[in-house]
Image (cartoon, rainbow, N blue to C red):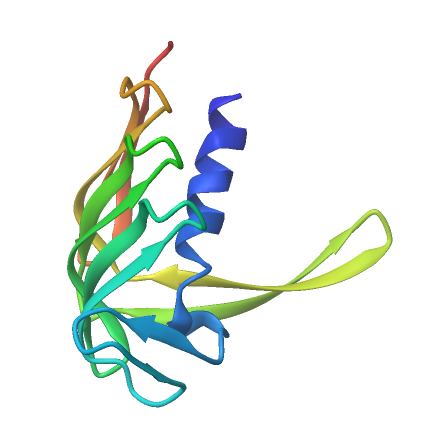
Length: 139
């Protein structure tokens, strides 16, 4: 269950505009663009609640990023390091079907993950964008 939840949190992060979406709204200046993303970034659920918030510098996630569950509880929080941020494209074969996925590399420091009730379910520790430790907590 935890791995499924972590996968969903990762999937949530992967829906950001740097990873293939052609246009998003940057709430700081209320402009919709497929060009370089700069500054504060916020994405909202259809119900208006905050889904993702963070900062972009030259299309790269940088600084503290947070994701939220649809009920408003925090889902994840951690730091992206612009010095080693990159997007890696993977081709995955699953049940005879080929999927192309994109994943981000650039996490740094401590990343924390929570369930929909606000209970911490895991922590990942990175050093210069390389994972060094994973902790999972039972509910």
